[in-house]
Image (tube, one colour):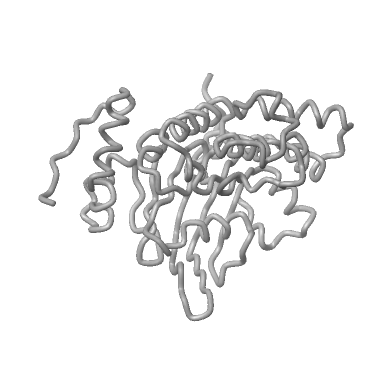
Length: 280
């Protein structure tokens, strides 16, 4: 079946559109003239050196901080111009996972997942509980985890509980801030596989702030590089290896970058040959 023209137009339109973003903290300018388009259905990685403002960009998009200037459109709307009630309708269309899950320590896993459902919907308690347990299962946790408190979980389980909460309202966009930080390599790979599976199964767009090279090679469709207060390059990770910008070369063709490429290539995910190194 041929998609209707309206559906095609919707697919072409960026789900997130940033233009001329300016973020200042006192006399420090973190972002200036920053432009970015995020395509519907992609996994986009955001990378950059320390202090480049990766998490600041995420927080600006979801409205946790107010930019000094510029325009941010999510789902085609400038959320900063909406009334609170209308804005909340948009906010439930995304989920966020912060580092270490950022769970409420006084609530069980199930209660944490129920929290956004109770905030955004007027549903019977039994329905809320059923939805919460479904999301816990989707995140790859056993149902026995529902009754546990965050302090009783491992780091990897806390992140999965955070994913369950982020998925509570059936979002279209999933924002992830350093999701594999603190995980061992096996746990990080399992988490990457979870995100890749959820992206396909749920039709998610994933906005991923990370410094994990394995993750970038394993699951991203494109990577945006922050530098000089703006996006200096955006492309599939394999294409970025050919970018002459010094930081990009050092990041992707350094020892860790080449090791990540070998590891993912060995799994059959990446078939392209390893490029020759520059003398280092």
